[in-house]
Image (cartoon, rainbow, N blue to C red; front, side, top):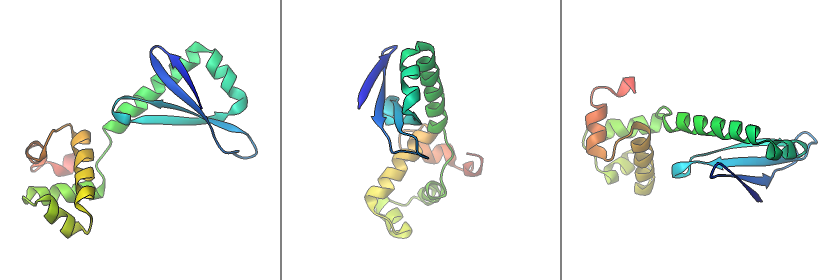
Length: 136
């Protein structure tokens, strides 16, 4: 694994499996809050990418844009189910029992929901989604 720095940001280069008979590498950029994006390129193209600052900046720009888009992605059906139950004032334990998942899994879903919608807690979530869940 190699690390390349450009504009105070890091790209991680790691080996990847042979794909369609071509030796490949993975180029990964991780943004804030652990969101990241990776691309797989032929190993033969790696030196062109590394030696061309404009190409590296273009990849960083693309990665940042993709990360920003993913952070605002739509809610999954499970996340919508959890919000609907929260609107009925269910506790984490009740959510877990009703959905046949663990309390920790409920907490993980809630964390993802909070991040996607941009709220800090269940009170803000319920206020935000109350009556508007179908439009989110």
